[in-house]
Image 1 (spheres, helix red, strand yellow):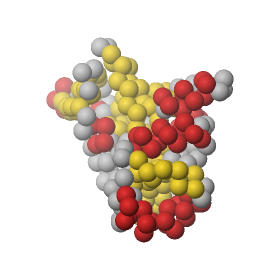
Image 2 (spheres, one colour):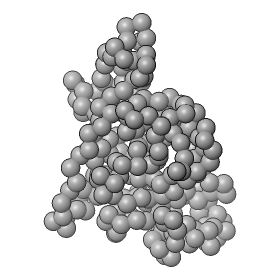
Image 3 (cartoon, one colour):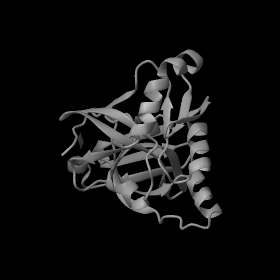
Image 4 (cartoon, one colour):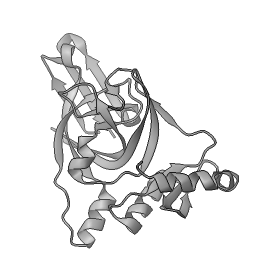
Length: 79
Length: 145
């Protein structure tokens, strides 16, 4: 799965991140938390600066993950 | 505020569709140039302005053609059920008669059910401007700050 290691890292550190930085954005590469940022764009730009065109995770630190709903029937899932 | 007004005889069956270009993000372009690496050429496609869509989304082919890597994963809910979508950070450029609109942001990579479009412009972009649908004249206007 894409960004599997990074998502696992977030999950393993979620409790601490919620206490310390709820609502902010964490930048994770593999098993390492690179930093926490006030803005999502700052986190993304730092990730690009450090890692170029390689996968990294930028995630909003929150109790419940954001989801997206597509109402118009133009998007489907899986195959 | 750059704006584009489009007339379309097909607006009733197709909806408000515009041609756009997708590019790598500005920071990635700078990173690639600094390393003397090739910057991917823009990808030109048609997208639908979809007020039923919360976040701009693209066909899975777009990030593949640009050769870019994801920066996130999100859960999506569709008429077909729940799934996961990779998230990419890119630029989308719209050329208008009075300027170029460039939107840099997150795009969900999704499977689209329509063959004639490669993306959806969602409310995350529309909140930064105005979108008018003029049905009786088969036109629509999109303007962004």
